[in-house]
Amino acid sequence: MIAGKRISLCSLIAVFSTLLATPVSAETVSPTAYKIGELFGLPITNAMVTGWVISLLIILLIRVLIKKPQLVPHRGQAVVENLVSSIRDIMEPIVGKKMIGPTSPLLLAIFTFVLMHNWSGLLPGVGTFGTFDHGHFEYWFRPANSDFNTTFALGVIAAVAAWAFFVLRYAGPGLLIKDLFGNKASREDVGTPLWILLFPLFFMVGLIEVLSIAVRPFSLAFRLYGNVFGGENLLTNMSALVAWIVPTPFYFLEMLIGLVQALVFTLLTAVYIGLICNHGDDEHAH
Image (cartoon, rainbow, N blue to C red; front, side, top):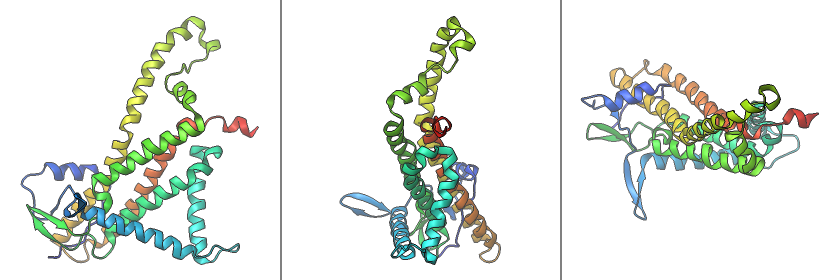
């Protein structure tokens, strides 16, 4: 069976309205990925298969573009170098000159990965072929970022694992604790008695900051998942009404939304790292 192509829309409202709507339309996209098999007892979903294929294509594309690096770059190498330099230029003011070198591979990988998987829904065959099951159209190939498991894994990697590595490696646990729970007031400006009384207040603020750090993976995951999954439902229903011409503008919208969401995800990752690690660049420069 063939269903019309669909596209992502930047809106969490579409996600929750889809989840809460009753009765479920026959054209509604399932909020969870569709299990298509098992490997060593572990479920394999259509989102996982699409994710593996797109990830492999990204690696092959980069290898084809770069080929053998040359001092005077050829066209493909220039494309990759421009992408790298663009991401570095955007992220350097956020993470700082000291951290842009170590963090560039991570930030570039996150941007490329998220962007290509956001755009994967526009490829022929992705989100097109499948079968109806329990009121949902189950695609055989589903964009990986329309599965919350993928976006949550990305959030954990970016906002927990990578953040903790760079902060502990380059800032140290002492600076992290001081930044979270330390007294931010100046003793000379407020006076010693008030400065001492402010310690419990800043400690409580630190606890709130720890809570905000703990929810970062969820905020990153829901934002990305909401945009991609919401658009899946939007264009599926649009295409069910009018299969040709009318859904076309949404393809261009998807390209824009995919780019913006990849940039936002990468920028937030850089901000999390820069909040702790980007200290003292001006002083070191002098």
